[in-house]
Length: 269
Image (cartoon, rainbow, N blue to C red; front, side, top):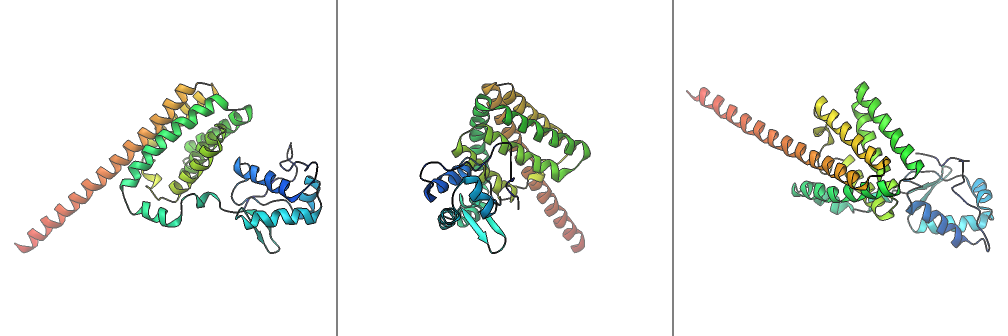
């Protein structure tokens, strides 16, 4: 699990002003969660350090943390600290996830939904990305290029999700941010399709890298229309790759049945 840095360039946990109540602390931490700054599994600083950074008494801090735990946003581990809970995984309930996984039509609907969502997100990112956002995108893209060049397939897959999450953050829309994160969580779990199908060959991996580069170039360059078009073209490519994989798989199944039937016929002669 990740730990929140003790002393970043600017402190996540600002001093609580005025009345210094537990409600103010609850609101501050809720906003850090809502904005996606604190993520699932992040560990909060220890009680003593956090109370000093917030400039509140430890009893007030304990009351705030207890309230956040009651709301299901934080969880305390005995002797192990306080962590952000898995709030993303709760966007889709388990029964809904299992229902989606059992029906193939959901894959088509998921890609259609993502096409619209990714287009809007990239468009907003091109309009709103800060210098920090652009540096983040560039850094992840460099990681993706290195993983591609060295053939580290799993690292390339991980960078793919990281990049899309960073684009979501650069759009500065909290509803889009959390919706996208929940979508990527399901994708990583293989609910809709196995991402390995999309990265089936060196040529396919190169095409995907070029598409990610095009999306980032449009965002960093501040071109909303181009960013939206590049993002949607990327999803169109994935849709085509999935259809081709499914069709190839069906042809393989038919060929196998024909071979079995032919072998059975030969044995009966």
